Amino acid sequence: MVAGCVITEDCALAVSADRMWKVSCSGDALVKTSTGIFDSVDVEGDGGPGSITTLTLSAAAAAAPGAGGNMVRSRVLVRDDATLVRRNEVLVGSKVSGNLKSQVTEVKFEPAREGACVAKFKVEYERLDGGGALSAEEQAELIGGYIALMKIVETYLVANPAEYA
Image 1: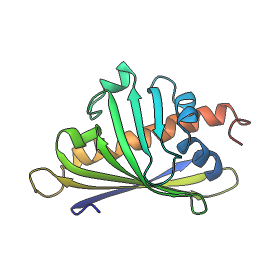
Image 2 (image 1 turned 135 degrees about the vertical axis):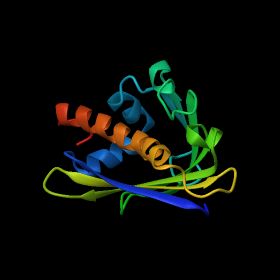
Image 3 (image 1 turned 45 degrees about the horizontal axis):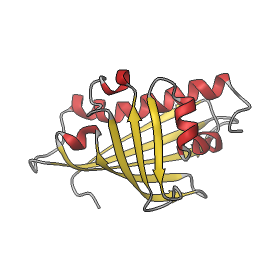
Image 4 (image 1 turned 90 degrees about the vertical axis):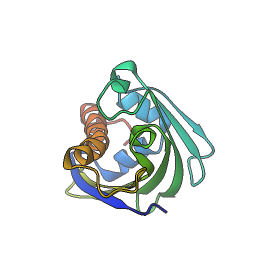
């Protein structure tokens, strides 16, 4: 469990919670719906708790501010198909490689109006130096990467309404 600071943000999406969940739990779907972001997504395990996911970023994505390198490796802590909650511990990459001792991310997809949902994000982190919260800019950069990814997936799914339905 991460002790330290928490960032939360909600993101309204024009795609159903079930469709977003299907993509978030499938490496192949994530690569397909996020063209230009990931070169590959490899999962060691069945995708449930304890599984290790390695996201290899494209050169362009790796060069983006806050990317933390060309690879992000995380361990699934929780995957609840009933409540559409996924919680991961970032092991390598992202800000963990630089400023953070630990980082745990959580997303919950909540149904909204017909064919839409809200992605509720939470990032818990602890700084290497034991200091307090990251600056407002660093927090925005950290959570912004997750929001941007969801918006890219949303764009793909809106343009392809039969996929992952």
